[in-house]
Length: 164
Ligand SMILES: [Fe+2]
Ligand SMILES: [Fe+2]
Image (cartoon, rainbow, N blue to C red; front, side, top):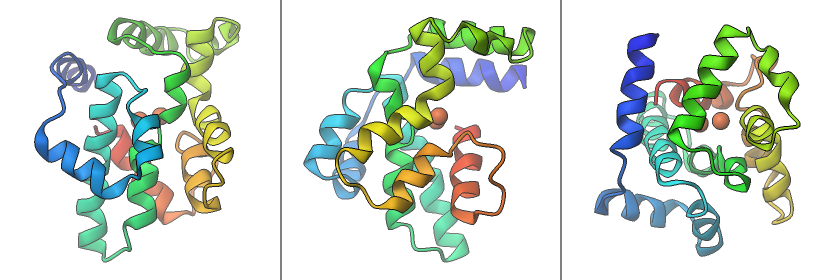
């Protein structure tokens, strides 16, 4: 787990979009979605792209239609665009969450902490205004909800999110 976090930190400080990423984004997002996407910090952009690459691979293997889930993957953390978290903020919150066993959530009056815990719902609220299809909204809203277990697309998204 610690090794994984270090790897994630290393990825985050070295994140940069390449030509392949831009092409991939353009083939899966329309111009309005691209505008939203680029409001994320670069490391969140890279994370979302890596999640989507991973989702695409799994959809191919499992022969699942990937259109909706790919768009949801690219936009799953869009709620984070309301308050950019630096890599250091994120690291501190992840460690604080572990040490406090989730009690850090009580400090939700601090905007960065609020966004960290609630970005699924914030993303849902942002995209709802653009009349998104219910399925995309649902996947984004619930990507950190551990109470929903019987949804195979959501499970693919959650798995790819946690390992990227
Ligand atoms: Fe997330
Ligand atoms: Fe994520």
